[in-house]
Length: 349
Ligand code: 13P
Image 1 (cartoon, rainbow, N blue to C red):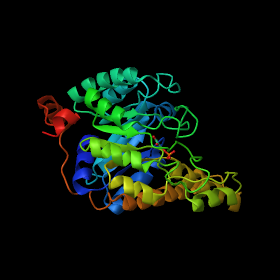
Image 2: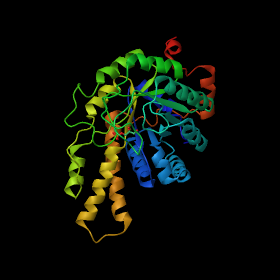
Image 3: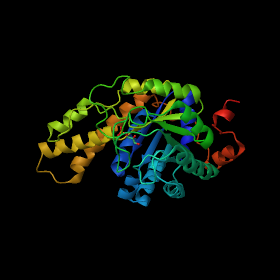
Image 4: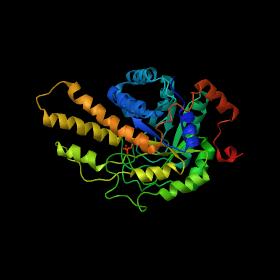
């Protein structure tokens, strides 16, 4: 099956009342792990690459691997997404490669570190929306600023510093016409999100619910949504790692989000932990081994297990065969005719 539009994938998720995991990739084994899990659970899937991933793997290698995944798995809808684009140019180059979705993260300036002004964010996101929709490509924006740093991208600090204001979220959706909106509700990228199991004082699910009530036609995105399970931390530490005690976003909170408009759930750290734990185990238990396949195979399996658990928990499992892909050229026509317009003043009518 050709790569599908992320907008179609999220519209279907909204119809079915489920969420879709967006898993980060840097290499072949991670892509294979996602596809193993998608095949096993019969799930549609979003594969995403950060700027760091594109630089690490080189654009063409990474994109051809995704095309191979699509060719080898004709029954699985796959959307290929640029995670945290920092500029119009990053989004344009992803679209030129064939990505079917881009995130323009205008919450930060082009340096990917300094929070931008609301108007700067609107301006750059609107430009990307115009360009992408003309080509049938989906756009995710961000309002509010996440905590932490991922692949060199992020404002740092805790997730509580720039929580999304619901009024601003509505104005942003109206002025940009984004398909999907990442909001800041206290999560951050990476392993160190919370220093105890999060409650409502640090994870603002009430803000998410308020935003969904006012923006029912814009798909919400939860970034920084790894659960950082203790079992995965323990494996890493048992075999020589030194992770400090930490808590992620409990799956029940993500499920609450999914019941309230969250359609895309970003997960990277849990997979990194699974891979690292599996590799450490092989190194610690069989130090005589030196064939990379001896540790990459268990690493790939460990990641596939985490991904397939998340696919089941987010509810996307079993939905791969629900629909046939709309060609990207048809998506472009539908954007042009206004059929896919999500702006709150228009979508409600
Ligand atoms: P985690 O670090 O929680 O996996 O978040 C990943 C993410 O949000 C990618 O954009």
